[in-house]
Length: 357
Image (cartoon, rainbow, N blue to C red; front, side):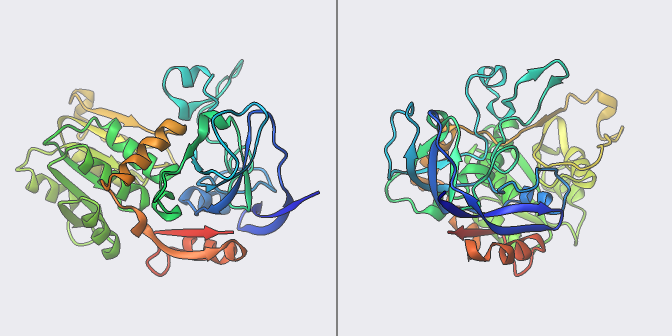
């Protein structure tokens, strides 16, 4: 049986490189030879045991690669073609998909509806930190990479670019809006870029890491605030003449950033939440105006599917944004454990790592 190298979850605290069989290809699948992938913050939650997955599962959900083999029913693609697949790989046929929420693709049961069902790579099926990955429902999920774009240029599309842009889209940012983005990690940086592309005239990036604040400026922030040196809410209110921002985007997943994002809104403003929260949130009575402030709180999960990927790559191909600079470190798949050690401890100014088999 042909074998491949893959990064597998063994137990909390241990993701190791191991040998696994190369997957068999079903009629609607595509086998993709991975040329570049990366590590996500969600993978670190898996590593730490904070998000449960099956032991022996291949981790990773951000693949760039080349079609190795196509299923018998897959049309419109060819072997040898460069492709990406979104971190979210929806089926296209579920109720959630038909309602336009492909990320929430999941079968209803007598016990209720299963959220996050569209996220399968490295969650419910083997992921892409490996030499090969099996892409389900290939005709819905594979997007050809335009000629002239490198792997690293499109590496952010499957997850963080799609997620960050979704935060801006869900906020319904209009031309001339003011927007505050709390946390300038990879997803927050993409939300900053998305807010600028959506027409915001004032984009405020909030963080405390100098390198991330500088990257925020490069990606569209007009003003950056170091929250370790000043109160971001008070500074945002000062910058907006006491009015507050039209929209805030929360990209960290803590009570403190959620509350600050709510407190800096104008009446009727929108809080767009991208953070993954590990405890119950509390909504402060005064900031929420006792529920009478006409605020909107919206959440988003990374949109997937080939049309979403096509649109994101079109933005990059047109030169509207360059996310390649977010790749700060590079590792071979053989060194995946060292890559996890660096990324999970956020050492050496790391933003994103590129992993090449």
